[in-house]
Each structure stands twice: as structure tokens, then as C-alpha cells.
Length: 318
Image (cartoon, rainbow, N blue to C red):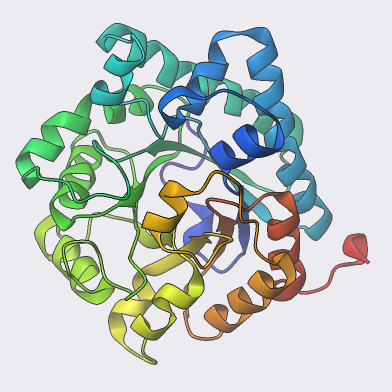
């Protein structure tokens, strides 16, 4: 049974960490071949599952050392129909892999959770298309398209679903509606370009306000991921009501644009300490920022730096 589906602890006054750039870590640091940038294929073998567990445990250790919670996002960013078809997965195969991803996280929670480190399990949903390109679905089409993956998560121990790297308001609305229909909480995470706007030209404020309006405030919170803080810092004015809807940040390590990252053959890991300091600045401006994690190019070093910069010092972290 889901443990936190009716009372997500990260929406209250305690801090949570999450992981970094799963796919970039596995590809560039561990030499894994991930066709279509799909980490879920590792769930198919004992060796792959062991590698994924080891990946998560590096971050869970940091959360435990700091006495904070952890959001376990599943390795299913690409586990939707269009991307799955490219990898030979039909609807039944995708349901199986989405369920398996949550089963693995439930096992990790059983072994790592403690009173000071609650572990929330989140089914990760990715965009239908490329996270660096604009989508073309209507909200109703997006709801229908993503419904199967959300339904799969709703039948497991997942506490919620989180949609990452969204580029359009319509896809966000559709996923939020699908989650509401399946009675599972959702979080929506947008990505932005170097000008702090979505590919459609919408501002972060417009995107959040429209999704809330069209879904009756269905998402538990919003996030920003797959962009560097310097890309969206100026899009966050001080003391505006919508900013209280941002519950977390999972930024890129690199300040390069999406186009530059798409063409890069080597990993730009940036400066973990500098990124941690930028998170501290964001934290001072975002009143409900409770989740600290990373995206492309980040790894456990970056999340540890975020923890040092943003969390109260604990005896275990000294």
C-alpha cells in the first residue's frame, strides 16, 4: 500500500533531497549504453537493477547523514508509448516495467527509511517527445496519452507521480488531470530556455497559473528541472504569490543551453560548490522550496553540496 499518498510530507515544513542526473551519470560516469536515454531498460537484468540500487543508495546515504527526507523518483522518464515503441515495448511491457520500477524503490524504502528520513516514492513521467523540443498535443490528448503510465503507478506503492522536463502547458494540464482521475497526487516540473521561458514563450508564472486554473489546482506543487539557475533566476521576482507553488528545483550542472548540451560529446559537470551556493540563493527567494536535487550533469557530489549549502548542520554531517 502507498505510505504517503494522502499526506505528502514534502509539502509541509521539512526538507527533502532527491537524486541528480540519472541518465548522464549512468552514461558518462559508469559507461552504460542507454538507447533513447532510457534508464528503465536496466530494470530488465539483475546487473542493471544492482547498478540502479547503488545509484540511489549514494543519495540516500547523503539524506540519512543530514537527517532529511528523500524523494525516490523512478527510472521511468522514457517509459511511455512513443519512446517505449522505439525500444520494443508494447503497452503490456511498459506497464510491467513501470510497476517493476516502483517495486525496486519500495524495497529501497524498506531498507533505508528512518523517522528522520522519510522516503517518498514518485513515479517519474517524461514528455511524449524530446524534452528539448516543443510538444504539439492538446491537453485532452496529453491526458489520454499519459493515462496508462499514471494508472500503472496508481496501482503500486507509489505515493505520487512527477512529470519532468515539460515544455508545454497543455502536456502539463493533461498529466495533472490524468493523475487526478487516478486518485494519485502529482507534481509538475517545467524546463526553460536560457531566457527563463518555456519553449512556447510562456513565462514560468504563466505556466503555473494556467495549469492551476485549468486543473483546479490539482498539482501538489511545481518544480523546475533541466535548466541552470542562471537561466531562470531572473524569472523569479520577489514576493509573488505563484512562487509559493514552486516546491523544488532539479537544475543542470552546466550553464550551457539545451542546444549546446544536445550537441556535446563530453559531460559538463560544472562546479558542485558553486551550484550549491546558487541553490542557497534560490532558497532565500522561494518560500516553499523543499526539494533539492539535480538534473543533467549532476551527481551525488552536487547534491551533497546542495545539502551543505541549504540544510542546517547536523551532528551526523559534521
